Amino acid sequence: MNLQNPKKFKLLIDQAHEVALNVLRPISRKYDKAEHAYPKELDMLSSLVDGMNDGGDGMNAGAAVNKRGDTDTGNKNGVNMSTALSIIEMCYGDTGLLLSMPRQGLGNSAIAAVANDEQLERLKGTWAAMAITEPNCGSDSAAIRTTATKDGDEYILNGEKIFVTSGERADSVVVWATLDKNLGRAAIKSFVVEKGTPGMTVERLEHKLGIKASDTAAISFVDCRVPAANLLGNAEIDVAKGFAGVMETFDNTRPLVAAMAVGCAKASLERIKEIFKDELDEQYSTPILQSSNIAAQIYRMEADWEAARLLMLKAAWMADNKKPNSREASIAKAKAGRVGNEITLKCVELAAAVGYNEDELLEKWARDSKILDIFEGTQQIQQLIVARRELGKSSSELK
Ligand SMILES: Cc1cc2nc3c(=O)[nH]c(=O)nc-3n(C[C@H](O)[C@H](O)[C@H](O)COP(=O)(O)OP(=O)(O)OC[C@H]3O[C@@H](n4cnc5c(N)ncnc54)[C@H](O)[C@@H]3O)c2cc1C
Image (tube, rainbow, N blue to C red; front, side, top):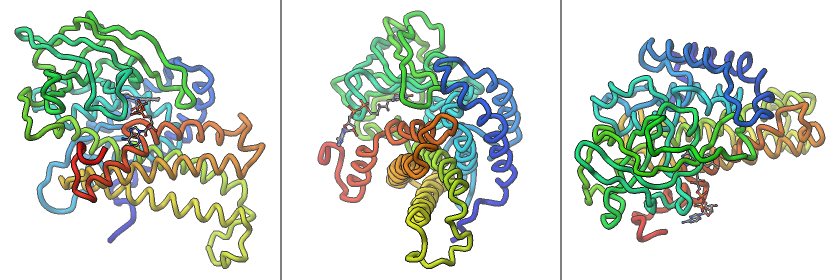
């Protein structure tokens, strides 16, 4: 095993790190205070990222512009790995700002995961949000009620979506809807709805604990017509395949959300190590029983953080190498989400008044980190998925 970051991504990681320190950190507090204001500084940054993406394989600096790996054999570190590594650095800068980056939405991941070649080409360069959650359905995404009814060359969408990240700002929203409620999961498909489509209305923006730079929208769909060609992937209802089509999206996005948690926690961990540098032994040569209690807690956090990072890299690597990774993606998200929450909050605790004060970003990172253990499947849901995989049980056998 070689546990170092792949050498070919060194430049990318260094660049993302510089962006985090010099572009994101200086405006972190400003957009934490100015909830719902669009961070206009991101326009130039996202153009730069687009330029890097055009540079070829692996040159992604933002969230979720990934697709499944395109090799059948060998050992490839591709776009899932490079995206995960750059996300760590960007979230070391600011998680809310990363989530606000144009053209880097979770809907882009859905497109990358399930769109056909024509759609991939047509939707190139779009900024897509993802709308699954509804007022009566969060964790149980199979329970969605939004409907899609075929009418000639169009589908008519009706329903309500809540908590849509970038739902107001994005060019389009990838909406999950059912073609036939009686056919269960297999009938759930995703549809690209462009901003401004009649019948689609942003009803409100949510006020949140953290990631305040990111807009979170409630959107209604009333007789909203979209071209039939905007149904992502295959329109057939394959009862045998069930939910697999749309679920593939999560196999790609969960390692990336884990990367966000790792990046946000890295920010807190580095800051606390700076604050307590006199307590720490950089060589790790002091026996643990002779270390201070604070040092012991910091070493423990370092170990947890490293474990989360490695699990996340494994899940991303599997995606690059076309290996089924649902189990590993959930393990990574569960571990990184939990450890990320624990570390960021523990760092506030250890720094006490300094940690709680707005002069520092420690309190903000603790708030920002919380969502990473909630969206894209909560801690409990990830554990449930892992348990199902371990025990060989279906979702109806283990709920
Ligand atoms: C800031 C923010 C941004 C978001 N962005 C998006 C987005 O872009 N697109 C989108 O579609 N959604 C988004 N969401 C929604 C998010 O994915 C859901 O909040 C999440 O899936 C949990 O759903 P819920 O809030 O309805 O909680 P519920 O499903 O009601 O869960 C409540 C609690 O019960 C637990 N629970 C539920 N079922 C089980 C079970 N079977 N076993 C054990 N425990 C269980 C959960 O873990 C949780 O602790 C966002 C949410 C927030 C807050």
